Amino acid sequence: MLPAQRQSHGRSRRRRSHDALKPIKLVNCPLMGEAKRPHRVSPDSGYVRAGLRISVPKLGIGTDRV
Image (cartoon, rainbow, N blue to C red; front, side, top):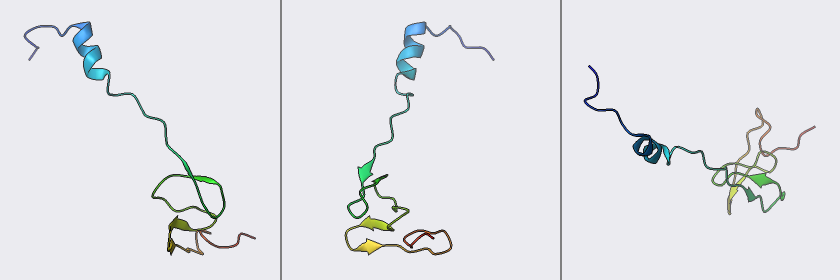
């Protein structure tokens, strides 16, 4: 089934105006000073937030890398 009328360029572009990707925001890890995404684990220090550090030796998160 076809649309009753063709959609105009302006209407299509207005709809697509919100489809653009936003840049990833980064914050600095307070322990290591490296950039990390908010609410994510810092791979080197295991820091998530104040009072919470995660250690996963199998993945090398929050451990000393040799």
